[in-house]
Amino acid sequence: METKVIRVDPRKPEPPLIEEAARVIKAGGLVAFPTETVYGLGADGLNPKAVKRIFEVKGRPLDNPLIFHVSSPGEALALAEEVPEEAQWLMDRFWPGPLTLVLRKKSHVPDVATAGLATVAVRMPDCPIALALIEASHTPIVAPSANLSGKPSPTKPQHVIADLQGKVEVIIDGGDTPIGVESTVVDLTRRPFTILRPGGLSREALEEVVGPVGVHQGAVHPDGLAPPSPGMKYRHYAPQAQVVLVEGERGERLRKMAELVGQLKEEGLKVGALTVGVSIPGSDVERRVQGLEDYAHNLFAFLREMDELDVDVIVAEGVEERRLGLALMNRLRKAATRVVRV
Ligand code: TXA
Ligand code: MG
Image 1: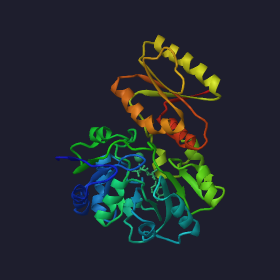
Image 2 (image 1 turned 60 degrees about the horizontal axis):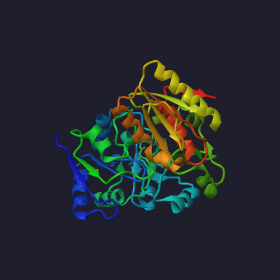
Image 3 (image 1 turned 135 degrees about the vertical axis):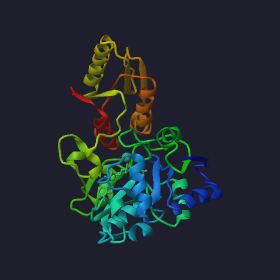
Image 4 (image 1 turned 90 degrees about the vertical axis):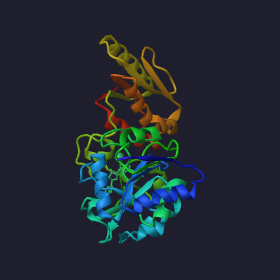
């Protein structure tokens, strides 16, 4: 299949270009598009055939449900029932933005999109291109991250092109995605409300609006426990390279990282280091981030880059699980082949 890559202005999306992509959605085709978190692979959420193709193209297991992207709270409410009043407070405060709400679904929502669950996940992205595309398509757009299943989520148009060229009708190139990790998925069908997947909106921010919110254990320690959200049982965000994640008190973990880099080098391996603020001597490839936002913005791109540079092992610095740190540690643990705690 011929894939058309369309460059669109991320601030002022050109209406004729959006119309062209919307026609593809309406005809049951697939369009990859940017959001403020990561790129999504979109289809008409109310067209089961189109939705099914998303799973085929990504190589995604059919038991992993999709998020419905809407351009207004009203559109989300049209897909859900028995909606608690707090849902409205959260939409008022955080939409558009990196927050996905899990609600009881209405019966017309196709089962293939929700993997047969009684719930539906909805979110309104904070991205002019995404919003314009949803509006012009006159339908909610289901969109998983626009990577092949198991690969790091795409935060740059070239990541989407690398994974999906020749497999989808249209890829919208709208530049880099600002946040860089996916949305926070919160289940509003149980009390206390529970974060199923930590993401771009922090638990602390949610709690300011609705009070104490739980975090599913599986979201903190992705290995071991029963998955809360079907998508969480698969190994995700994994580059080809091995990832050694080092957790613990700052000074200790940096010392440990330096030691590990030295050992791995001695074994003749090509070693990459991913650190916050400081540099670890001795690695072959070094990537430094300045704080949590920068870490989130760059993590997936760095993982892909390390593969392009044929790095064998990435030694990555863990962070404290506060604010964006919770989402970062979730992604890092899922990418890790080994976790070292000091
Ligand atoms: O930021 C994002 O959320 C991105 C952009 C494109 O919007 N999308 C994204 O989609 O990350 P995906 O499919 O890669 O991840 C969706 C997550 C999965 O963990 C899935 O299991 C969960 O949301 N999910 C979807 N529907 C659900 C439901 N009804 N109940 C529980 N979890 C659900
Ligand atoms: Mg994904």
